[in-house]
Image (cartoon, rainbow, N blue to C red; front, side, top):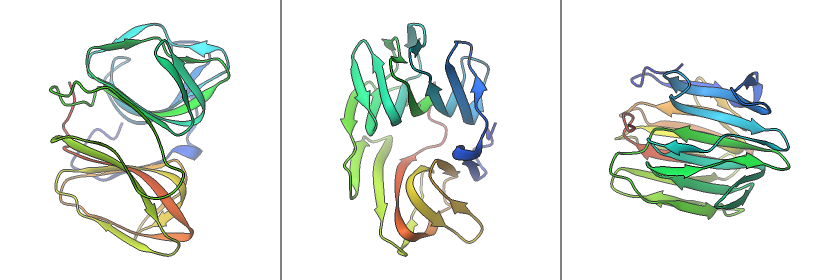
Length: 208
């Protein structure tokens, strides 16, 4: 799904059907997927109250943003607005005693990235979440009716958290996901309520 990295990809996560995972109570809305159950993937994942995944190793790393509820593992509790990076070689047993939804990217770390991170999003304004020589991840706030242009030398990926943005041939609303190949800038205008985006600037062939 959306595995041609040379093409623009857009998925409207809020309107996608939930599909069952191999474990009861855990459902997914795939946005990008390359491979079988052990895939390089970007998804929205929903945990029903009391559900959990089995303990597992992240050979290619995992990063996630908690959209709703509280995500839990043996390392801590991560409420809505938490951004977490678990590098290649990390292990955990994820779950949610009261339920949650996360935006998660699997097996897309650079092979040299070994930094673990857990941080919380600011309520307002721009915010740098993570940066190294391979990638940059941040929150981009856009004022009401303001235009935005992001240059794109390495490849861009974004998820709309709040509000809406419109381009010449697209409209992105909450949980809409977009990936742009290198050299294709992101040009859009926010709606009357402004917008807030999670954005990643990184080479599109990262991963193990």
